[in-house]
Each structure stands twice: as C-alpha cells, then as structure tokens.
Image 1 (cartoon, rainbow, N blue to C red):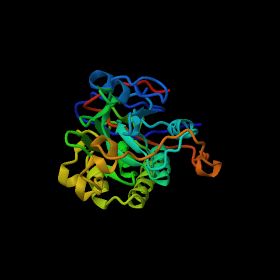
Image 2 (cartoon, helix red, strand yellow):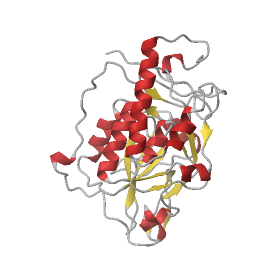
Image 3 (tube, helix red, strand yellow):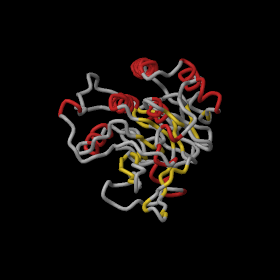
Length: 296
C-alpha cells in the first residue's frame, strides 16, 4: 500500500522525517524503571512510540509512560499494552516528537474513551524509605501531533519547563526542501483532507481554533512555535494547574486505582479499522532535538 506522510520542519534542520514510518526507553510493566532523561530521552523520543507502566509504591499508584513517535503500529501497540490492565482514568506522561496524523487521532480518541488524563514529562526512577517512588521530570518535549494527543486527555496538565511546540503538517518525503520541492494536486488534497480531520478532532477534544491557527500559521521551513503559558490556556491544552489532579499519590493523597490485571470486556477494546484511503499522513518536527531517521 502506498503511503505518503506529512511532516513538520524547522530552519535548523536537525530533525529528519521518515517517509513511511517513523523505543521507548520506557517501562515494561514487570521490569525495573530505566532512566530516560537527557540523551536517552532524546534517542527514545525519535523512535516509534512504546508504552510502559511506571509503578509507584506504596499507595501512589502509577502512570503510563508514552515515549516516541506515533506510527501506523501505535494504536495496536497500545491495545496490546492495555489488554490485561484496567487503565480507565489513568494518566499518560508524554515525551514525543509527533508522528502520523491519522494514527494519532485514532489513539487520541481511544484515550478519551478511557477517560485518560495527560501530561508532559520524563519518568525518572527514585527510591525513598517508603519504597519505589519514581518522579516526573517536566523538562520534556511534546511536539507536533503529540500536542493533539495531549489534548485528548480528559484532564490535562503541562508542567513548567515542558516544551510544547506546534508546526504545520507537511509532505514527509519533501521535508528537507519544502520550498524547492514540487507538489501535485493530489498532494495538496491529502494535506487539506488531514487538516480537516485534525480540525474535527481538535473541537471534539475541547480544543480551540487558536490551537489550529497557531500550528497552521508556522511554515515548514521555520522553527516550531513553542506555546507560552498563556497560549496553553487559550488553546485549552491545560485544564488544571495541579499535577495532583492527575496523580494524587505524588502529592501525598490516596492514589487512583488503575492498571489492575483484571481483563477488560472485549467491547471496551479498540479494534483497528482498515483505512478507507490508500494514503495517509504524518506530522513530525524536523528540527531542534533529534537526528535523521530512515524511511521504510
């Protein structure tokens, strides 16, 4: 099946976009927690998104770590991760450079159905006299389509120091020379189609036209636009100023009960549907924090 991607560019051109596909150094539910700060987080953020459960004991619950780029496999990967867990009402901690427009929309709708909360951060292991007490480092990135995944949270918190950045979506196979490349009418039709899908999703999730306006006003040959605290408020990306509203256990209050081993009903699971069109798109930043990725 032929696949065309949309992507985002920056003038620094330190990012490169995969034409067809874009590991989480994250957390397997039954493994120890690796550090994902610094260079390790950078490397993970430019790999396909993976999910892990970050346990926090005692009595502080835990959260879902989602690090990397959304690909065509990501919705199914999430279903595989969620299969034997009751994740209703859990919190997702994002560190991502964006990815596939349509697959991010699919994943975001699934998260909203589960009532997940969202935030931006890097999960870092930490021990305490009480036991395993990992922390969330807010100095993380949520770029391009990740911003719309952030929007899908029922409750949304963006810590100080988090880099939330938006940009136009673009044809990924012409990402390195957006001005000099040629485009067909079909290419423009794909872009327009996915902008329409993104607009519909934005309003479904409670976002505002300001978010779309900010993203679509930045041409692909410029750096991504980093949202100010005021813009995070105006776009409805923030619904609370307190991390305790998402993860009460981190603030000393009783934690929400999530991620049990109890299987969910079949009807409560997402079943990926075949795409009606033969082409789809991806939105990825191509500057600032990562190196080139090969297509496949």
